[in-house]
Image (cartoon, rainbow, N blue to C red; front, side, top):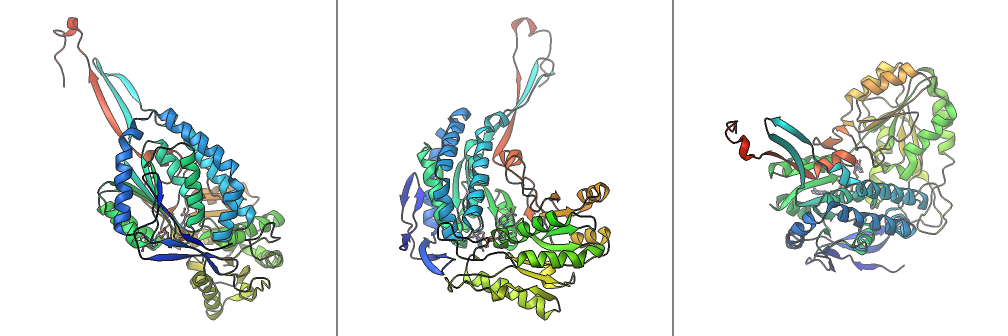
Length: 499
Ligand code: NAD
């Protein structure tokens, strides 16, 4: 496929070139070839997008909630009809296998389905006669123009965590996708327009820090949702809130997988493999540290190593590719992940399966690393503490569940954690005491479905209101309290007005 020219921005309902001389590159990570260029928007482009969104806001805010939801019903149907095409784009620009891309589109469809039902969540509350003849009610208002800045690892799904809810609440939304994967975000945006969204209600700008800073400093942007790495999340949260905006920022992770001696071995190994190596480990909910407890360690490491060695690594940009795992997103990221394996070796851990030696003969230019298993890792080693974001699973052996829980306590992140066990008391203790916002019991990836919030804690999330579900709706609305009193002529001389 030929290289696609510079991607367009969507501003005021029109696809147009950005006014910039700066561009980023989009690679096909299966081959290492450049397939498109992303404009790195200047402040001026962001201003135009905000202006168009601000202009569209009053009419969209006043559109009945049921009509706003109807756009989402059509959008949902269109995304389902075009799901394979979107999934192929994701595989091409990101490198997920087709099955992984298709599953991520399905998760996105569920986000839209949640938004279709939002009108009932938007209902306020009323108390009649909160004082004599005084009624009190709350109603929810949209905020105005809101923005979303998203990472590379789920090009269609993560934006869909945000804008179906934001838009159905009555806001106008500006998306700034990752410059590494703009193509699927653009295609899904086209489907949203086709669903009948008025001009200016949804916009797309592209870019890097310059573009994000323009959103963070623009007085008409009322709120910003962010998903990405922890240093950027912290910066965005601090800058956005200092500028008076509502900000929610979901960030990095180190998700511990605790395996108790009584765990069912076969499904445990399967669950861990899927968790650690699904999407080549480029998931914020990937199991990224295995913690075998007691005497399960030797058997677990050996069985996991054997099964991991069977994973087929290869290019994902061709139809029906017979592979289980695709490439990483870019060459620098590949080098970074391999660097972590080098560091583990240097610090004294044992590499029992080495992905650095993977050979993908039909595509030597691709950004491939194979599944990697590292045993005898100590808690203070780099690979036990830092987010690797690749198919690398370090094992830290501990003696007791208490020790495993203490290990979680020391971790800078607290996104997810899972326990594999047959013991109810152990699972209950873990659910209550382990330091993480999302917990799995005999489940490899406890990522919430659309009906639950994405509840990372500590260094994995900055703010109070999480992304998705009811908390997402709360984030994109502000409440107004209204107190009402009417006077009947006969009552006028009975009560003195109290307020
Ligand atoms: P990233 O932080 O590099 O980029 C995320 C977004 O921020 C992109 O749109 C990027 O253009 C923008 N950005 C980058 N640097 C910036 C800067 N200095 N100032 C302003 N904006 C900037 O993240 P990534 O590499 O695209 O994604 C991987 C990270 O995302 C991992 O750490 C992963 O754990 C995290 N992630 C978290 C969740 C979650 O829900 N917690 C979900 C998916 C991914």
